[in-house]
Length: 130
Image 1 (cartoon, rainbow, N blue to C red):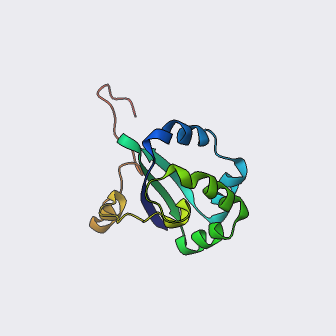
Image 2 (image 1 turned 60 degrees about the horizontal axis):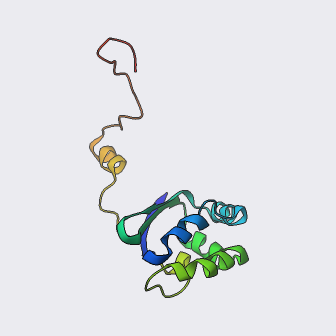
């Protein structure tokens, strides 16, 4: 599985409209994202319109190719392109992936430790199981 994060800049004057366009996203676009093999997909909006996206996939090149050939994705991206600053091409194809520098589970696996969320045998201060 591959984790992909990317960053785009939303035009500050269009932030309200950008948010409205995602509440909700077209059902057919949601279906295309899922059919492309992207999952656990999230967008986070920061100060001044900095948008960070994250998703997981087994084959990002195949997912990008699928979406590049999708008529639904082409329509969605054509409508969304105007929201972004300094973007050359479709947002789903032109966003540059961020470099992952830390992932907790990977480093825990390298040390032989299990994530705390896998096994929770702790008790609270009153002795009941949590």
